[in-house]
Amino acid sequence: MTGSTKYIFVTGGVTSSLGKGIVSASLAKLLQARGFTVTIQKLDPYINIDPGTLNPYEHGECYVTEDGAETDLDLGHYERFLDTPTSQANNVTTGRIYQNVINKERRGEYLGKTVQVIPHITDEIKRNIQLLGRKGIYDFVITEVGGTVGDIESLPYVEAIRQLKWEKGRDALSIHLTLLPYLSTTGELKTKPTQHSVKELLSLGVQPDILVCRTEHAMLKGMKEKIALFCNVDQQAVIESADAETIYDVPLLMQEEQLDVVVLEKLGIANYPDADLDRWREFLRRHKNPTRTVQIGLVGKYVELRDAYKSIKEALDHGGAENETRVEIRWIHSEKLTSKNVTKHLGGLSAILVAPGFGHRGIEGKIEAVRFARENKVPFLGICLGMQCAVIEFARNVLGHAEANSTEMEPDTKWPVISMMEEQKAKVDKGGTMRLGAYPCKLGEGTLTALAYGKTSIKERHRHRYEFNSAYLGEFQKAGMIAAGVNPQTKLVEVVELKDHPWFVGVQYHPEYKSTVARPHPLFTRFVQVALDHQAEVAAKDHVKA
Ligand code: GLN
Image (cartoon, rainbow, N blue to C red; front, side, top):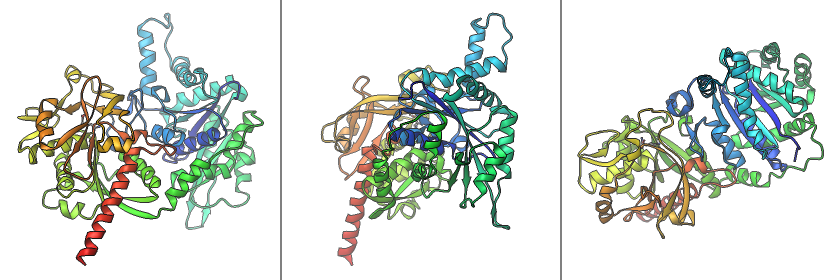
């Protein structure tokens, strides 16, 4: 629709954590709402090849794409906002850039030249940015650069932006996201850090076209003029980005500030259609005006760091909105759960979700949480490690194999009900070697999961090394834990359910990655629904007692 692909670069200044991902996703949403095709890419200036090997304490959740890339959690926002899949090409790190350049050097492709940051690293960055544009399907490629301008590690990225802006002329523009700090002693917002940050960018040869200014308080009259004057930007290109009630409000706030209009005008695009955000507004209306509230427990070992469970939290919000329900998450630290205190921690919850994870820490607490949900008939959803814990718990407490475990936790366990997948055994490298990305799954007719999805053929994303050990399947099924979903090719058990329980579902895959504003994930929608049912049942019983 735009003729050639337009490139929009988003950098950050003053401090990190200003929400570049949300601003980028919001701009993309606004452009998409006008009928344009948009994709967003994140460039991360760290040396890891991808965040797959990073501890969630370092970098929050690792988001997995359809094609099996382990990526930054911002890609989750991109998909949730746009409802279009991202891929490996949407997240590139310095590690990957250098790896590509070094591989090329080893193949002799630099023909004897000295390989340098400029032009070889910057060329590789530019190639990766334009890769998405070359697909010919996007009107806009928005490229967000992680980190803060002025960091040593982001220098090659800013240089690549400088060059691309020069080469592309009116087909490229740059947005700089900054902070207007509020000084409570004088009650003022200050513009100086923004001025300095723009100077820093200018010293690297990049003149930002648009400034998005994050503020805790409304900007005063005259402030935009002042920033415009000091930073060589048009006054209407100084965009106020006030703190929002929810991340889903940001596109609408950016629309009020006309961010998309300024972008379109600067890129020379005229006669664009009006934005259709009806669906978005409808979601927001449901999300912000719930008629009911339900409490769901999320049991995990990183609960002090909410970013570690970002997609799960958002998927619960989406499922909540579908039910016009506010989902209150009670964050429960799995390491602190024991058989003695489990009732105190989990009592009164309308549903329990046991989270994914790796390694031994907190596993026994997760198993206690499963036991509580199973015995007390509280709706349960186990995701990945959460599903594996459900299997271990069943083996220990129903089948009577007290020492059952996953070989991840106890390699020599006598009862390896969860064991390493065959193809994993020969793998030595840790990075990018798990079972990753989307795989098909066939759900049993009439199972809770098939009812939730409304179909029996699904495709969901995976990220794990261990699996349900099918050698025990017969024993499990006889005792009431059924394989409700299997991989049609490999026959791996992907979903388990309990017969003798109102709603107990364990999934080996990660449904949370596929929940978007436009299409809340059916499993989460149903999970919130059954939590509401449980809440109503408990209330009815209490009423009878009283
Ligand atoms: N640690 C488990 C495995 O590798 C589960 C992984 C997960 O929860 N994502 O199989």
